[in-house]
Structures are given as C-alpha cells and as structure tokens.
Image 1 (cartoon, helix red, strand yellow):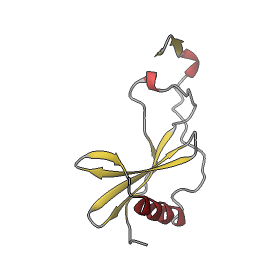
Image 2 (spheres, one colour; image 1 turned 60 degrees about the vertical axis):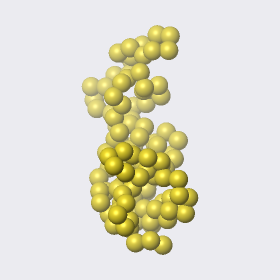
Image 3 (cartoon, rainbow, N blue to C red; image 1 turned 90 degrees about the vertical axis):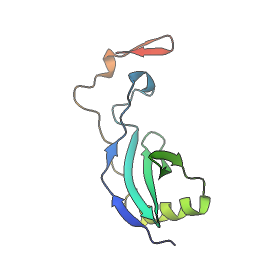
Image 4 (cartoon, helix red, strand yellow; image 1 turned 135 degrees about the vertical axis):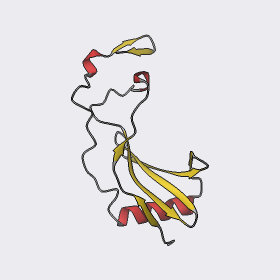
Length: 113
C-alpha cells in the first residue's frame, strides 16, 4: 500500500450556495469533508455523503477537484483512511439553529426561502 501523508483531518460541511440545490431538505449537511491526504506530489480529498453513506475521493489538480478514476489508488486511499479511523460512523454535522426548512417553499421546480 502506498505511503500517504495526512494533510487535513478537519471535518467540515460542504455548504450549498443556492437553496434550490437543497432538494433533500435535511436537518444536517449532506456532504462532509473527512480528510485530505497526499501521495507523492498529488493531493486527494475524501468526502462522505451522509444521506447515502457513500464515500467519494477526489483529486485536487490545478485548483480543481476532479473525480479519481484510478480504481487501485481509490481502493488504497479508502483502505488507509478507514484503517486510520477517518471514516468512522459518527452523527452528521447539524445545520445551524437559524436554519428552518419549514420556511422553504417548493414552487414548480424552484425552491424559495
């Protein structure tokens, strides 16, 4: 298994810029950063989808975040972060107290706050 270096283990939500994208109407943040790791000269971010309990591993290249398509490397990163406990099951990050989904109205295909 490759030797990975821990860059960032801070857990933080990926906030939605536009409420119209918040179609799931959850009381917690759906997407969450779990860890960023480096290998050789490359950096990878590991995200968790709290709704589906799915893991996504993306590569940071030239300021862009792109899907990692190398299955072998994906599996190695997944195994490493799992063994280190970064993907342990913990409650998702709640949305702030001021968030009130009852004020959101769905009008046609658009959502208004």
